[in-house]
Image (spheres, helix red, strand yellow):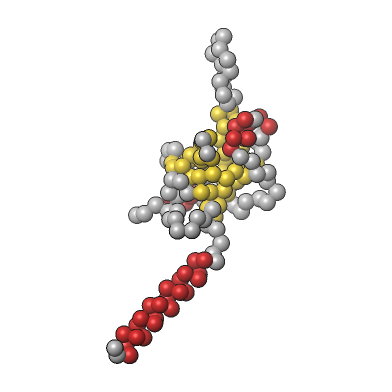
Length: 148
């Protein structure tokens, strides 16, 4: 083996090591505002169980990006519960995440109480989150952006 192939192999090996080291210590991917450390952390189940107590408040929920709802909103899923959320004003790129990507969502809780039809029980309120910040919770070995 001549010197050139050895140098080339060494350079490729060094590049791979540097790239692996750089990605291992990088900060989580964020969209929009930083998540307020003082904001209460609640599960989606807790939020949906008593939405009136969270209405208008900023909260942090952990779950998964579950895909686009329409051009401007996305679905946020935690176990069996799912709600609609709007992406942060300066974080529209979060709409490019792959469904199933684990995220932490920080935002304002909106609750719309629907009126009951005459003689009917009041329907469940519509609960959504107006996103202020989204942070991807990295899972080693998983791609979090759509291809293409």
